[in-house]
Length: 118
Length: 146
View 1 (cartoon, each protein chain N blue to C red):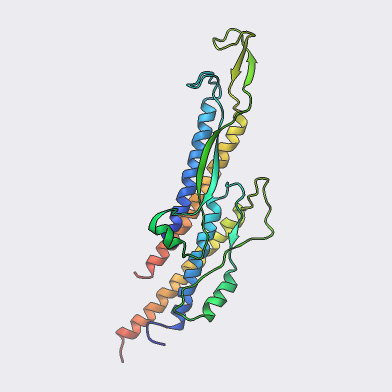
View 2 (cartoon, rainbow over the protein chains, first blue to last red):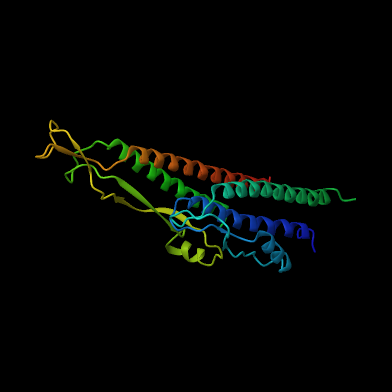
């Protein structure tokens, strides 16, 4: 564990990577809100996060998208729920901001360690 | 796919919804048009949406194929004509009336088109929200290095 490779930074990095992947699924769902036959895609964020942390820190994160069960299908086969996607979008944005703030905090700690040798 | 790539997905949806609104507006505008280049009354147009994988050709596509996530943009697969019969109204004085005095008007239902237009506008707004969220995330990511 070096100065620039703390477990905190690894944790936040994995989180931001996974959040980006989830955002891509949410955005894709919203883009296809009127596409006949399109099925809502999402991932098990919690499960993927635990898996990502158990892996080597250098391994890029991966996630398996899956169909979301329990959503109401429209007659054209599309089951995108605007409420669900909007809610998750807002939630993910706030979590992403919290994580970036935490990362800035971590860097400012490292910076103060560099600039204040005693 | 990074955050900037997501802007492309949302952009494709904005484009598709705009085209849908344009077609609806054209249907409404031509709701009483009895003469067209092809002859006969105007026929209602319909857009068809289809999901497509972003970057469908070239190097970027090959690179994207290594990605583990299956994200999809939306595209207008085609504009088709509604081939249902025209609405016939009795108006013998009309220059386009046939021998029996009936005029063929377009098969456009203004109520249906208005609803379609509203739907397109709402979907457009939803995608703008998604765009703003992605933008805020990019700004947050940039703020790490500030």
